[in-house]
Image (cartoon, rainbow, N blue to C red; front, side, top):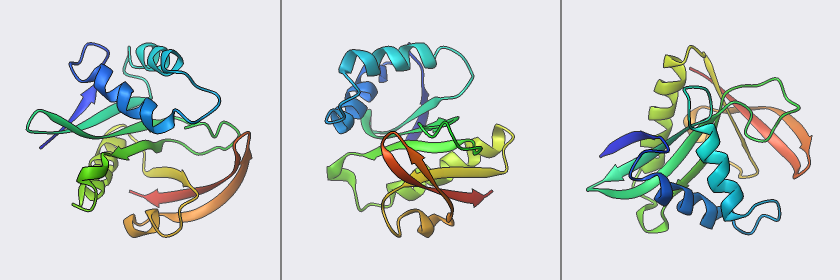
Length: 150
């Protein structure tokens, strides 16, 4: 099992973008080209966002992102663990725990002492020590902001 940082040169780059796009494709504000170009542009340096892929036996299983704002531009919190997606056939195997621990470690290495997520799902992120600290109005509706001390 590997959790690799994805760059535009990575062999998993296109597959990662395909995975994320297929998850988000029902959004009205995106197209495959828009998502592809967003990641092509944003992953070219060491600044956030950073995209990570969980690889098992050369198979892309899951992805997540560490992002500065994750679409919550009107809130003072950063960084966010975002775009977490585990392929359906691999869910229920504890992989979200692996992803969260990896994200916490990487965020600490970036010099932060807190991590954030936003979610409409009740009870999920609380399992990982997050506490709701805010509710923000965004163009996509209200988002509950959760914080975890690292």
